[in-house]
Image (tube, rainbow, N blue to C red):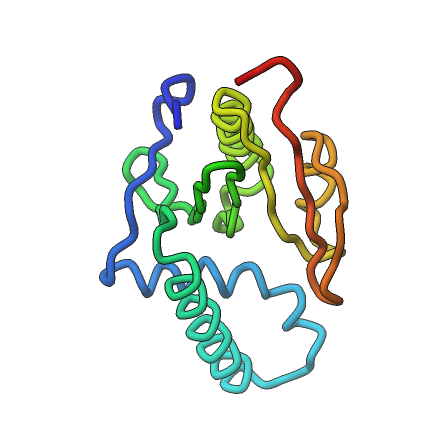
Amino acid sequence: MDLSSWPDLGLRPISAADEPLLRTVYASTREEELGLTGWPPEQQAAFLRQQFDAQHGWYQTHFAAADFDLILERDEPIGRLYVYRQPHDLNVIDIALLPAYRGRGVGTFLMRQLLAEADHTGRTVSLHVEGFNRARALYERLGFAYVGDDGVYLEMRRPPAAGVS
């Protein structure tokens, strides 16, 4: 992935030492939803621990060959980007930023870099997103189309640009 046009931005593989930060990123993606539950903080924290453990374990098991990266700005972790590169598909497993870094174009930039990579190699880009997630509008602007759902997540795909490979 070419990050040279945003020199303060970088990626590095996650490590076990990053788990507290990864938990924080995950929890930040669930804040709005959990705010509607009325649960006390300790119940929310227990739920987030259980959900993070389940998601993280599932990703690590089912996408063992994927790139699990931290997103860095000036070497400070600001989010996560998990991508599973297959021969015909580039699957964006997860992209999430800490709240202070959302709405600044970081996610759009990274997605455009992934799309450029996919176009260059003739691959489709696929992802799953909750129907109410605000990122869905970004994906639609970037050319992703709805192809199905599992009752919770919408599956979206974007074919490689015509004439590119």
